[in-house]
Amino acid sequence: MHRRPLILAVTLLAAILAPRAGAAAAEKAPTVVGQYIDLQPVALPIVINGQLVNYVFVYVRINLSSGADVTKLRDKEPFFRDALVRESHRTPFIVPGDWQKIDEARLDATLMRDAPAIVGAGAVSSVVVTSQAPQRPVMPPRPAAPARR
Image 1 (cartoon, helix red, strand yellow):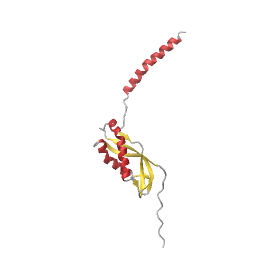
Image 2 (tube, one colour; image 1 turned 135 degrees about the horizontal axis):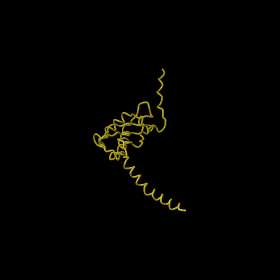
Image 3 (cartoon, rainbow, N blue to C red; image 1 turned 90 degrees about the vertical axis):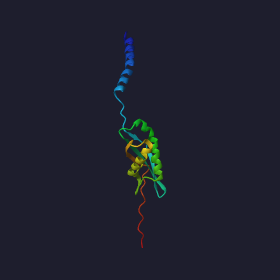
Image 4 (cartoon, rainbow, N blue to C red; image 1 turned 30 degrees about the vertical axis):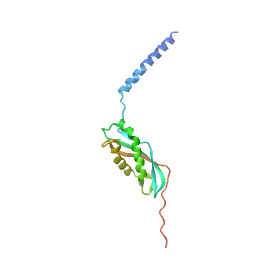
């Protein structure tokens, strides 16, 4: 007969104590933020002899130095993508003989060169291409057959 008031009391007590327990747990576990910026996937063109033959989608991680303010620098992510797209359209990051990959070393060097203008000197420690995927599989043309005499 007295079950309803008891159930109501337990429910109210749980509702009162649950937010306090959750807040205490949130205070104890600080959020860990990595010292990097992951760029959104960027489609870079593969241009051969002035003709667009493919796009390669690249995933880039920009590793920050230990003293960098990560939360402030993550807001600069669109600027890194813009610099990457501008440079790739100026001179594409092609690998000779492979129309499905980009030249990672050139991409890394380009972003390292542009980083001080975007986030300041000493904020970026390295650039890593984590993944690249072609839009479609494209094989380069076969070499021309030798001329017969």
